[in-house]
Image (cartoon, rainbow, N blue to C red):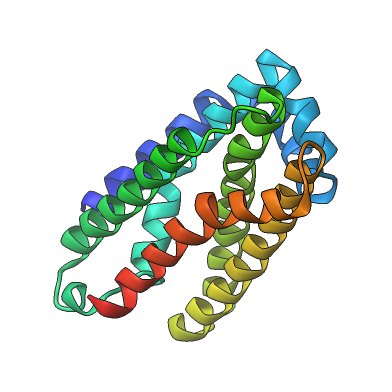
Length: 206
């Protein structure tokens, strides 16, 4: 019941802001192909706002997919009903976001170009939005084709991993435009590897 309501809310929200959502998609797709597009996107206030809105609209669908296909399912969540599992998944994802934001603030460099650092930070929103759309397409297509949920889950995890690797490459390229390779790698470890590693470990340990 709760998942149906949230799904309906998400659909209505996307419809309400459909024009802004559709307009920003080409830029988001371009950011996955070319790292400089992220700098161009951040240079436009309107595009930045539309991107932020698109990422917000994808939060509920992302949590619904992760929960429904049990892509994040620690042992303590296995006995939960659908609503409790969705709530726990959403809470874990929010904690992950807050940790990333905290590290982004704490590790903010003094010598790096602020515009470059902002573009690198906001890049996650670009990839998050596109990944959610990809997962939605996979869920719909594979469910319609009658593919078993476990195989769909496995395919989604692999695609998510590949998109994340591409995200790390693009973020590294953005950092390299303003700092050395060692510095870029250090920031990547602090801003990405630590929070993502903690998120993955929580799914394994707990």
